[in-house]
Length: 286
Image (cartoon, rainbow, N blue to C red; front, side, top):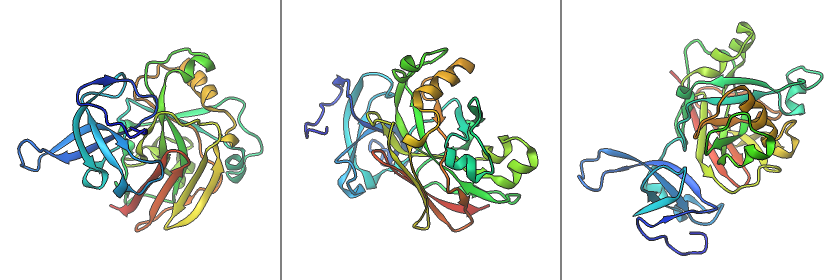
Protein backbone atom coordinates (compact mmCIF):
# COMPACT_ATOMS: atom_id res chain seq x y z
CA UNK A 1 0.00 0.00 0.00
CA UNK A 2 1.31 3.49 0.80
CA UNK A 3 4.58 2.06 2.12
CA UNK A 4 5.05 0.09 -1.08
CA UNK A 5 4.15 -3.31 0.41
CA UNK A 6 1.70 -5.23 -1.73
CA UNK A 7 -1.10 -7.03 0.16
CA UNK A 8 -1.28 -10.75 -0.42
CA UNK A 9 -4.31 -12.23 -2.14
CA UNK A 10 -7.21 -13.21 0.14
CA UNK A 11 -5.40 -12.16 3.34
CA UNK A 12 -7.90 -10.08 5.37
CA UNK A 13 -6.41 -6.86 6.64
CA UNK A 14 -7.71 -3.69 8.21
CA UNK A 15 -6.28 -0.67 6.45
CA UNK A 16 -6.40 2.74 8.18
CA UNK A 17 -5.93 4.75 5.00
CA UNK A 18 -7.30 3.61 1.66
CA UNK A 19 -9.09 5.01 -1.35
CA UNK A 20 -12.07 2.77 -2.01
CA UNK A 21 -13.44 2.60 -5.54
CA UNK A 22 -16.14 0.75 -7.46
CA UNK A 23 -15.19 -0.07 -11.01
CA UNK A 24 -15.97 -2.10 -14.10
CA UNK A 25 -13.52 -4.27 -15.98
CA UNK A 26 -14.10 -6.93 -18.67
CA UNK A 27 -14.30 -10.47 -17.37
CA UNK A 28 -10.84 -12.07 -17.52
CA UNK A 29 -12.32 -15.54 -17.08
CA UNK A 30 -14.52 -15.62 -20.19
CA UNK A 31 -12.99 -13.05 -22.48
CA UNK A 32 -16.54 -12.19 -23.58
CA UNK A 33 -16.32 -8.53 -22.67
CA UNK A 34 -19.06 -8.93 -20.05
CA UNK A 35 -18.54 -6.28 -17.44
CA UNK A 36 -17.76 -7.19 -13.85
CA UNK A 37 -18.55 -4.66 -11.14
CA UNK A 38 -16.00 -4.84 -8.34
CA UNK A 39 -14.78 -3.02 -5.27
CA UNK A 40 -11.14 -2.10 -5.11
CA UNK A 41 -8.44 -0.04 -3.43
CA UNK A 42 -6.69 2.65 -5.47
CA UNK A 43 -2.93 2.47 -5.03
CA UNK A 44 -0.37 5.17 -5.68
CA UNK A 45 0.68 8.56 -4.41
CA UNK A 46 -1.98 11.14 -3.63
CA UNK A 47 -2.26 13.61 -6.48
CA UNK A 48 -0.50 11.35 -8.96
CA UNK A 49 -1.68 11.19 -12.56
CA UNK A 50 -4.19 8.38 -13.28
CA UNK A 51 -1.55 6.63 -15.40
CA UNK A 52 0.56 6.20 -12.25
CA UNK A 53 -2.27 4.63 -10.23
CA UNK A 54 -3.46 1.05 -9.97
CA UNK A 55 -6.59 -0.48 -8.48
CA UNK A 56 -6.43 -3.71 -6.47
CA UNK A 57 -9.63 -5.75 -6.34
CA UNK A 58 -11.08 -6.80 -2.98
CA UNK A 59 -13.18 -9.87 -2.38
CA UNK A 60 -16.20 -8.27 -0.71
CA UNK A 61 -17.64 -4.93 0.39
CA UNK A 62 -15.43 -2.38 2.18
CA UNK A 63 -17.38 -2.15 5.45
CA UNK A 64 -15.06 -4.46 7.36
CA UNK A 65 -11.64 -6.08 7.07
CA UNK A 66 -10.52 -6.11 3.45
CA UNK A 67 -9.42 -9.25 1.62
CA UNK A 68 -7.54 -8.67 -1.63
CA UNK A 69 -8.17 -11.07 -4.50
CA UNK A 70 -4.75 -10.55 -6.07
CA UNK A 71 -6.22 -9.01 -9.25
CA UNK A 72 -4.87 -5.60 -10.14
CA UNK A 73 -5.31 -3.19 -13.07
CA UNK A 74 -3.89 0.12 -14.17
CA UNK A 75 -6.50 2.72 -13.30
CA UNK A 76 -6.92 3.94 -16.92
CA UNK A 77 -7.86 0.38 -17.92
CA UNK A 78 -11.00 0.32 -15.77
CA UNK A 79 -14.10 2.50 -15.65
CA UNK A 80 -14.84 4.08 -12.30
CA UNK A 81 -18.43 3.92 -11.04
CA UNK A 82 -20.04 5.89 -8.21
CA UNK A 83 -17.97 4.77 -5.22
CA UNK A 84 -21.14 3.88 -3.32
CA UNK A 85 -24.82 3.20 -4.09
CA UNK A 86 -26.62 4.58 -1.01
CA UNK A 87 -30.06 3.73 0.27
CA UNK A 88 -30.50 7.50 0.50
CA UNK A 89 -28.66 10.77 0.09
CA UNK A 90 -29.32 13.22 2.92
CA UNK A 91 -28.30 16.78 2.17
CA UNK A 92 -28.23 20.06 4.05
CA UNK A 93 -29.03 23.47 2.62
CA UNK A 94 -27.59 26.85 3.55
CA UNK A 95 -24.58 25.51 5.45
CA UNK A 96 -22.08 28.15 4.26
CA UNK A 97 -22.74 31.78 5.19
CA UNK A 98 -21.42 32.86 1.79
CA UNK A 99 -24.06 30.77 0.01
CA UNK A 100 -26.82 32.01 2.32
CA UNK A 101 -25.92 35.57 1.27
CA UNK A 102 -25.69 34.83 -2.44
CA UNK A 103 -29.17 33.25 -2.33
CA UNK A 104 -30.58 36.41 -0.75
CA UNK A 105 -30.63 35.35 2.91
CA UNK A 106 -29.67 37.55 5.81
CA UNK A 107 -28.89 34.93 8.45
CA UNK A 108 -28.21 31.19 8.60
CA UNK A 109 -31.15 28.97 9.57
CA UNK A 110 -31.55 28.28 13.29
CA UNK A 111 -31.65 24.53 12.67
CA UNK A 112 -30.18 22.59 9.73
CA UNK A 113 -32.41 22.46 6.66
CA UNK A 114 -32.18 18.88 5.42
CA UNK A 115 -33.64 17.21 2.35
CA UNK A 116 -33.35 13.92 0.47
CA UNK A 117 -32.06 13.16 -2.99
CA UNK A 118 -33.15 9.80 -4.45
CA UNK A 119 -30.59 7.06 -4.85
CA UNK A 120 -31.39 7.10 -8.58
CA UNK A 121 -29.90 10.60 -8.82
CA UNK A 122 -26.42 9.16 -8.15
CA UNK A 123 -23.96 8.88 -11.03
CA UNK A 124 -20.21 8.45 -11.20
CA UNK A 125 -17.03 10.01 -12.60
CA UNK A 126 -17.31 10.73 -16.31
CA UNK A 127 -21.05 10.05 -16.41
CA UNK A 128 -23.07 12.79 -18.10
CA UNK A 129 -25.25 15.14 -16.10
CA UNK A 130 -28.38 14.80 -18.22
CA UNK A 131 -30.54 17.90 -18.60
CA UNK A 132 -34.19 17.03 -19.35
CA UNK A 133 -36.14 18.94 -22.01
CA UNK A 134 -38.10 20.73 -19.27
CA UNK A 135 -34.98 21.96 -17.47
CA UNK A 136 -34.69 25.60 -16.50
CA UNK A 137 -31.53 27.11 -15.07
CA UNK A 138 -29.47 24.18 -13.73
CA UNK A 139 -26.62 24.95 -11.31
CA UNK A 140 -23.55 23.11 -10.07
CA UNK A 141 -23.03 22.85 -6.30
CA UNK A 142 -19.66 21.52 -5.11
CA UNK A 143 -19.88 19.67 -1.79
CA UNK A 144 -17.95 17.43 0.58
CA UNK A 145 -19.84 14.14 0.92
CA UNK A 146 -19.71 11.85 3.96
CA UNK A 147 -20.09 8.07 3.47
CA UNK A 148 -21.37 6.07 6.45
CA UNK A 149 -19.66 2.83 7.38
CA UNK A 150 -22.14 1.53 9.95
CA UNK A 151 -25.71 2.26 11.13
CA UNK A 152 -26.24 5.47 13.04
CA UNK A 153 -29.29 6.49 15.06
CA UNK A 154 -29.57 9.07 17.82
CA UNK A 155 -25.79 9.48 18.05
CA UNK A 156 -23.87 12.20 19.82
CA UNK A 157 -21.42 14.26 17.79
CA UNK A 158 -18.50 12.23 19.17
CA UNK A 159 -20.15 8.90 18.45
CA UNK A 160 -21.14 10.00 14.96
CA UNK A 161 -17.59 10.39 13.70
CA UNK A 162 -16.83 6.77 14.57
CA UNK A 163 -19.50 5.69 12.05
CA UNK A 164 -17.86 7.45 9.08
CA UNK A 165 -16.30 5.21 6.44
CA UNK A 166 -14.80 8.11 4.53
CA UNK A 167 -15.37 11.11 2.28
CA UNK A 168 -15.85 11.80 -1.41
CA UNK A 169 -16.67 14.64 -3.80
CA UNK A 170 -20.26 15.48 -4.71
CA UNK A 171 -22.13 17.79 -7.05
CA UNK A 172 -25.62 18.64 -5.76
CA UNK A 173 -27.01 19.54 -9.19
CA UNK A 174 -30.06 21.80 -8.80
CA UNK A 175 -32.66 23.26 -11.15
CA UNK A 176 -33.18 26.80 -9.78
CA UNK A 177 -36.25 27.41 -11.95
CA UNK A 178 -38.03 24.35 -10.56
CA UNK A 179 -36.83 25.06 -7.02
CA UNK A 180 -38.43 28.50 -7.16
CA UNK A 181 -41.61 27.34 -8.88
CA UNK A 182 -42.25 24.35 -6.59
CA UNK A 183 -41.44 26.02 -3.29
CA UNK A 184 -39.59 22.84 -2.25
CA UNK A 185 -36.59 21.01 -3.58
CA UNK A 186 -37.44 17.41 -4.50
CA UNK A 187 -38.00 17.79 -8.23
CA UNK A 188 -35.28 20.41 -8.62
CA UNK A 189 -32.62 18.14 -7.12
CA UNK A 190 -34.01 14.67 -7.83
CA UNK A 191 -33.52 13.99 -11.53
CA UNK A 192 -31.44 11.02 -12.59
CA UNK A 193 -27.74 12.05 -12.73
CA UNK A 194 -28.26 15.08 -10.42
CA UNK A 195 -25.91 13.67 -7.76
CA UNK A 196 -22.49 12.86 -9.21
CA UNK A 197 -20.20 11.20 -6.63
CA UNK A 198 -16.54 10.20 -6.79
CA UNK A 199 -13.94 9.49 -7.83
CA UNK A 200 -13.47 7.28 -4.76
CA UNK A 201 -13.94 7.23 -0.98
CA UNK A 202 -10.96 8.54 0.97
CA UNK A 203 -11.04 6.90 4.40
CA UNK A 204 -8.53 8.94 6.37
CA UNK A 205 -8.83 12.58 5.33
CA UNK A 206 -9.49 15.15 8.07
CA UNK A 207 -12.65 17.00 6.94
CA UNK A 208 -12.21 20.09 9.10
CA UNK A 209 -10.29 22.33 6.67
CA UNK A 210 -10.27 21.13 3.06
CA UNK A 211 -10.31 23.29 -0.05
CA UNK A 212 -13.50 22.76 -2.12
CA UNK A 213 -13.70 24.04 -5.70
CA UNK A 214 -15.98 23.78 -8.70
CA UNK A 215 -14.75 24.55 -12.21
CA UNK A 216 -16.75 24.74 -15.43
CA UNK A 217 -14.76 24.34 -18.64
CA UNK A 218 -11.63 25.03 -16.61
CA UNK A 219 -12.92 28.26 -15.04
CA UNK A 220 -13.04 28.20 -11.23
CA UNK A 221 -16.45 29.29 -9.98
CA UNK A 222 -16.56 28.04 -6.40
CA UNK A 223 -13.56 28.17 -4.08
CA UNK A 224 -13.90 27.78 -0.33
CA UNK A 225 -12.87 25.56 2.57
CA UNK A 226 -14.77 23.17 4.82
CA UNK A 227 -13.60 25.22 7.79
CA UNK A 228 -16.30 27.70 6.67
CA UNK A 229 -19.11 25.18 7.21
CA UNK A 230 -21.69 26.61 9.59
CA UNK A 231 -22.24 23.12 11.02
CA UNK A 232 -19.40 20.64 10.83
CA UNK A 233 -19.48 16.95 9.98
CA UNK A 234 -20.06 15.72 13.53
CA UNK A 235 -22.84 18.23 14.17
CA UNK A 236 -24.63 17.32 10.95
CA UNK A 237 -24.45 13.60 11.68
CA UNK A 238 -25.74 14.13 15.21
CA UNK A 239 -28.69 16.13 13.90
CA UNK A 240 -29.53 13.83 10.98
CA UNK A 241 -29.24 10.63 13.02
CA UNK A 242 -31.72 12.15 15.46
CA UNK A 243 -34.21 12.44 12.60
CA UNK A 244 -33.69 9.15 10.77
CA UNK A 245 -31.64 5.97 10.84
CA UNK A 246 -28.56 6.27 8.67
CA UNK A 247 -27.38 3.01 7.11
CA UNK A 248 -23.97 1.79 5.92
CA UNK A 249 -23.29 3.37 2.55
CA UNK A 250 -25.65 6.29 3.05
CA UNK A 251 -24.29 9.60 1.78
CA UNK A 252 -24.50 12.95 3.57
CA UNK A 253 -23.98 16.13 1.57
CA UNK A 254 -22.59 18.90 3.76
CA UNK A 255 -23.64 22.00 1.79
CA UNK A 256 -22.17 24.21 -0.91
CA UNK A 257 -20.25 27.51 -0.71
CA UNK A 258 -20.86 30.65 -2.74
CA UNK A 259 -20.26 30.68 -6.47
CA UNK A 260 -22.99 28.35 -7.71
CA UNK A 261 -23.79 28.96 -11.34
CA UNK A 262 -25.45 27.54 -14.43
CA UNK A 263 -24.28 24.57 -16.45
CA UNK A 264 -25.49 23.94 -19.99
CA UNK A 265 -25.25 21.35 -22.71
CA UNK A 266 -21.63 20.85 -23.75
CA UNK A 267 -20.09 22.05 -20.49
CA UNK A 268 -17.69 20.03 -18.37
CA UNK A 269 -17.88 20.52 -14.61
CA UNK A 270 -15.25 19.42 -12.09
CA UNK A 271 -15.62 19.29 -8.31
CA UNK A 272 -12.28 18.97 -6.56
CA UNK A 273 -11.63 18.54 -2.85
CA UNK A 274 -8.21 18.73 -1.26
CA UNK A 275 -6.98 15.36 -0.02
CA UNK A 276 -9.65 13.43 -1.94
CA UNK A 277 -9.48 14.05 -5.67
CA UNK A 278 -11.42 15.43 -8.62
CA UNK A 279 -14.89 14.48 -9.94
CA UNK A 280 -15.49 15.47 -13.57
CA UNK A 281 -18.75 15.15 -15.50
CA UNK A 282 -19.86 16.36 -18.93
CA UNK A 283 -23.24 18.07 -19.25
CA UNK A 284 -25.63 16.83 -21.92
CA UNK A 285 -29.14 17.79 -22.97
CA UNK A 286 -31.49 14.81 -23.47
